[in-house]
Length: 120
Image (cartoon, rainbow, N blue to C red; front, side, top):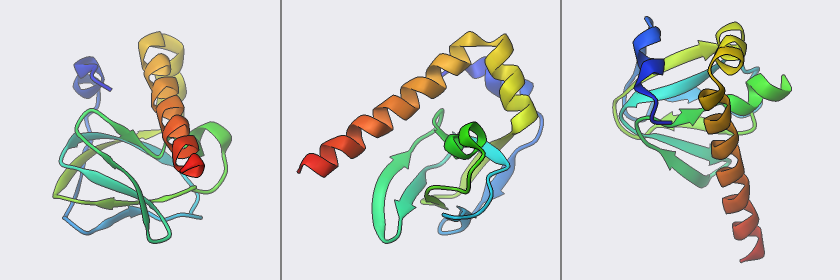
């Protein structure tokens, strides 16, 4: 996600220290997070699925399907994250089609990588 306007509209950021858990698999998902600084590892069990860099998002699936978190997010480095709750998420999708398209691209990319891993 490279749209800096999203960062300009966000007024609240959360800091996470390296190694700190941001959310756990199975927990309810109330926010997605835009990574402003640092790196976040996405894990299922002990398996590393992806490392998300600045401009990326984590936790979007729980806001879309209203089900528990499908993975755990852990700060790989010290991080600054911008939380986006469901109300703000829906407003962004409605008023910023580029944001909606970026979320779909992130999800499609993750699905393709997961499918590729299953083939291997």
